Length: 104
Image 1 (cartoon, one colour):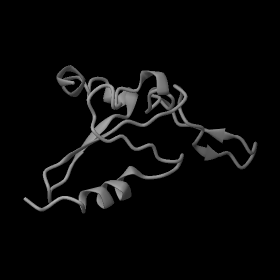
Image 2 (cartoon, helix red, strand yellow):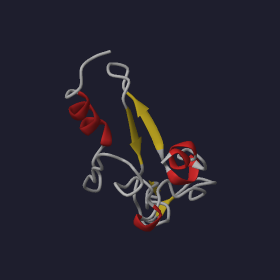
Image 3 (tube, one colour):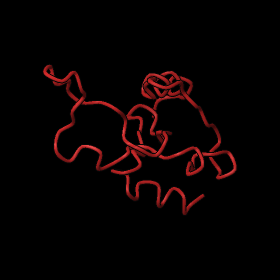
């Protein structure tokens, strides 16, 4: 698990992986967005064409990993793994989980 933790943030611009550290408990929460390996469909609607258009540089990063590329697993030494429905924010779950632990 040490190598996984050590390399967790490598290429985080592409993968969307990040770590949230609770100021209250000091616990670390590893966030790993799961996607289909390509950028999400979002942007601004062009009123003339009705098409979604992205700004220059959009699509450079997918911001997620596929399920097969995921490293946040019980098998890799993470003690608790939570999968959230699409569109859910991990931060409210982190708040709830963090309440289970005493303050520093």
